[in-house]
Image 1 (tube, helix red, strand yellow):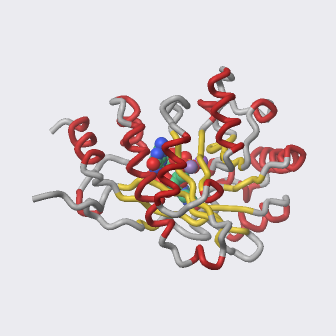
Image 2: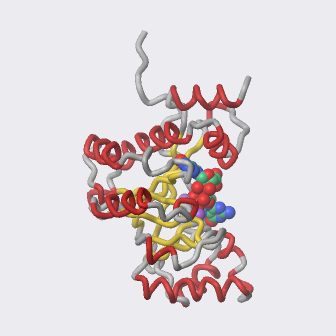
Length: 255
Ligand code: G
Ligand code: G
Ligand code: MN
Ligand code: NA
């Protein structure tokens, strides 16, 4: 069986699961939002990693339909969370591949689907990697401005892993900056990563950016981050990604 056909069928049948991982306020560990992460349904017996599956979807031209399935499932589950009653500011984030050029990622489609689930634009955060920031084409700039004018927030994901520089942030105003977990992993050792995280936190203050530290696994990492002024985090220490969708297709097929 070809992996392409398998992936195509999974997307077509909406046979993908979605996990939510909490994003928390470090002070009181209150949940501020959830990152949505694609998972294979437990029943499906897939042995391809999610990372590889995302790369396959990009290669086969399936990343936009995959996004749409993840979006639908995440929005549906998010809209039903009892936690929303206590916190109307609660958000959910979706990862956007740099292969989904802004023209394909229709803001009108997103708005229409949010409305369908009774959600506001302010409930959504789109996580983009710097691939999108590398081109400052007028189309990209316009898409960015329109998204933020609509109240849809943008997170720059995996910050620090590529060519990302704070200079991009002058041209593309984002709301959140997610420090990649590779910089958090060795924080305990007070080496180069410590200095990097420290300066990112200091500079992001000047830009009015909210920083989210990713991959926080230990209390030690959390306390170092807090000392450096970091207020928001995500990682196994606070909560692992948990599948929120059923393992079977959520729509009913005829017959
Ligand atoms: O959760 P996990 O570590 O398995 O995810 C591996 C990678 O896949 C991460 O980089 C994550 O951002 C990415 N990923 C997970 N779900 C999605 C998704 O729905 N869309 C895209 N584009 N990437 C995703
Ligand atoms: O690329 P992106 O940042 O979207 O990837 C998020 C991925 O990181 C998720 O797939 C999730 O499974 C993984 N992740 C979340 N928290 C932790 C953590 O504390 N440690 C490690 N190693 N991975 C984590
Ligand atoms: Mn992400
Ligand atoms: Na990341």
